[in-house]
Length: 419
Ligand SMILES: [Zn+2]
Image (cartoon, rainbow, N blue to C red; front, side):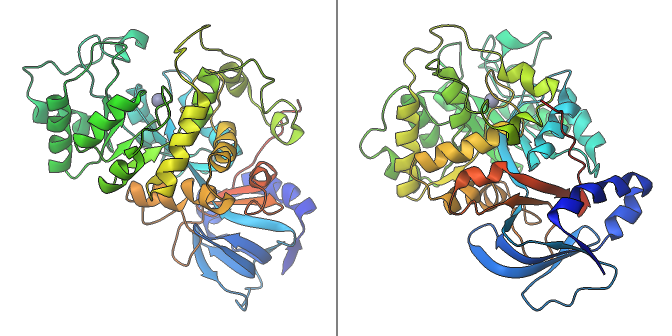
């Protein structure tokens, strides 16, 4: 039995290039004396056994095979790999974005539209241990000249009033959309309420979720009335009206908060949150810096306030609405992977406990999007794991102090960039 301390763990990653994927997957790893966040609660001082890419046991008295790499978990916490429930991949940097995500413990990204290349990428990602796993909305459902046609270099299909909605939705599914994303945005030409209802019905007919982009409270209410499954942003134009949160709860919608990007949209000129932390800056890649250092134009969406968004998230959470962590990376001022840690902190500031915020990036997105194989630490679940120093159930910022990341039981080699 080899015992690996936290210090030698980094060195052990050097062994991995010698193995092919099959051998990697047979590696047995045992986390001993470890505190575990299992997706909903903390389990203290237990053992987690991983073999063949899956979690095989979680119990204090597990027998550890002689071939196991043993990682002493004292003073550390093991968590399910994080979901980022709202990202984009763009046309050029897709694969690098998914590497960036994994560097910061995000093992599954839910892409929310834009890049048709993302569908090809999804096929390519497969079980590559060095990039985050991916699900995608693919091409969004929007009106002619609607958002985000103004951002696209190439024409994208749009839904006109006379178009066959079911045929349009079926074409998206045929292209590889895992869920249907609708755009409802009155800063541009947009769909009618009736069209939204029709798109939701068409998606549900094919057993796909229908989620929607909104940015203002009135549109959020319309969309919920139209029957969507989830909002991919919280609104920030106004504080939540009395009864809004209860209304959302009655309709069983989930809400992907994207506070990290709303913070960037409503930039007050304060020093960026990540700059003072060597735990973060040591791992920034050029692609991360590129989006982090971008800014929204001055006075962009002047009516939006982060405090409105945070009070809405707090009210929704208190009313029992499922809140999911999502960043909208690589929107200006955000980056894949990194910004998820800011999102967790902003969820806590909005009124979620640290444990509830961790669930918003693990068990809750798994449940909302129908993943049964991840988002938890339990026997029979994928070994997508993040090991951190400290206890993020007490201090959410501990998620930033990452010791190691595993995808399907294979250690991800996280290279310091030396900044
Ligand atoms: Zn987005």
